[in-house]
Image 1 (spheres, rainbow, N blue to C red):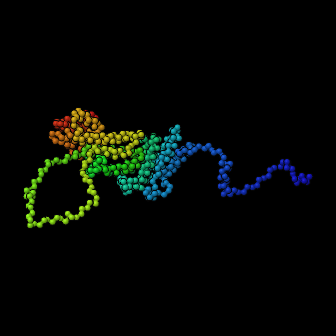
Image 2: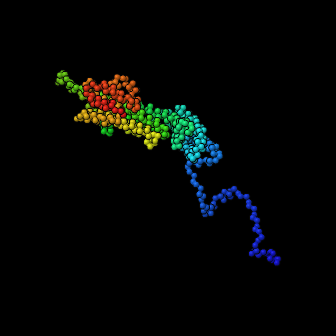
Length: 531
């Protein structure tokens, strides 16, 4: 019995389980170690991953509850503050202005994605959708004010226009220009989101009331892009206007076979135009700047058309009669024979010196060659074709692209006409009808006021019995400066003045003998709508 009490049977159940010993407080380091699996074969590694949805690049919209608008206002204000915050990391010396870095690329797009996510989430709720549009006014107005304050010291800095135009030495913009262009890129990215959401398109405040925000962003872009492109235009125009005056180039006879001789202005633009092309592409990354780009290209092409079509004809070298042979006096032909008492003449000392070959061969002779207007027109068309044009795949810029393409088509069509006029055999062995048909084909795509001064230099028109016809301004009896300022200011002005000027020229030269071709051409042009 006593033995049984001391050693209970192993098969007898215990009345209650023993209490667990109190657990010691966990150590912080042990908690960290236990949080990780001890080895790769731990059971935690075989745990099935959760089926949580993957996060997308666009931010999730705010939960629509009772405090939805308050939370949305806070979120938009925070997004505006982050959009203009300084990026992390040190700034490079060539990109720092006052110790600040420029706005990184993509922040305007990120803000637009946030706005789009909230508006798209409330498309089915018209009242809440309008409330969100009203909530956008304050943060976007603050954003516009901050952008203006950020841009003002950049535009007023003397470094903004130094250098005024890009050159081959410093082809990239300086730090001040980079900061200003960063503001332009930010505004352009946000405007792209506005276009996708159709925001700010109506002046009616009952629609969305964001028209002032859109106009403010477009104004910021213009304040930066217009001065920069204006500097390029003012630097390029003198080179193009110089094409109106013929220039001679000294070339060696051995180099004449490599290609046509070009005007010095064309030679200067061959090194500048690739730099201008890269710079213009950087200036016009935004959609609103495409209209400024189209205006720039059209004005440059028009000035080229005016300069090349009004180039002064090259005067032919004067021909002088052959000179008569010089009469040698008889006293010089006869020489008295030396007498016997006269000693012989001592030869000069240079006769006995050793004649060495020169150190270098003589340079080949060079001649002065005049560049032709046709060759300059083709070369200028190729150079201007390097510049970027408004995109043709965008509905907002398709009209600007068509206008630019028409201007370039006119410049391309001018070269064959100039070549035909400069060809002395253009009218040889051709009937009047054939010449007129060929002229009609060459001038079909050209404005009247561009083709007319070229045709006045054609052989039969410029060599009338009464003398050369002269320029268009001299024919209608007005000063040249006034004629160009009134009628040759641009494509639109030339189209308006074309029929009137053509009729005046037609009335004056109608009675001149030998001007039948020009009269027929003007009658056909005046009778139809000008190009």
